Image (cartoon, rainbow, N blue to C red):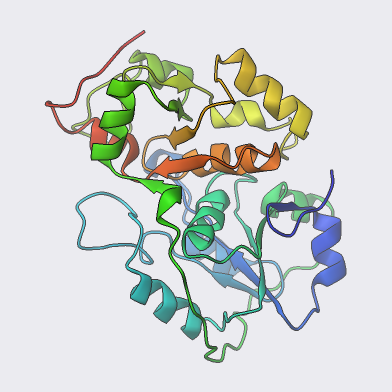
Length: 282
């Protein structure tokens, strides 16, 4: 793969840059309840040297009843300053599943106007499989100055997505499994209807990954979207269960040079909860 510090970097790239003074690394592991894993405990047991733990649920808008919604800019700034992330730093984010939740943090940084961030291709599993260095101590962190400039075109709310679905002026692409998308499998969160947003297309996030958990080549990514019927000449809205794996679609779109994309933050956790919103199955 070609390393790009604004989208995706290899384990070799990170190993070569591990001692760079302007590098900041985040373990952004997050798991669904049925995965039976505890992200913070795993971080405490071992992580890439220098990595901070990014708590997706805590660094969120906790005034919202929806899970891990985008935090207010002030909260993002406060948490990043406390973890020693400042202007001019290169950020690399990874997770313990290989490619699951890290892209959400990549997207969040971009939403806040910070583009010098990349996902570690293959994540912690690949790092471990290659026998690379790990540690179990959190780094010493000093406050840094960080500014943000929120890029609101990168996020969509339910009203905007409902309009896009009705007007059919965007491609809405859902990262959930085919069975969940078709409404054949119950949602992992209680109280949600089954099905999908009318007119949306299904690109399961795993279809964008190779067998070793790394992201496919740009040509292969493009093929996956095309086979799913996604018109890449149109703007794309990505969605999923709660705005986490949708960001893998966003990352893939960025990798193939498709810049006109945004993420539906509430995703199915919001759409599936309200009876007034239409649902399709099949």
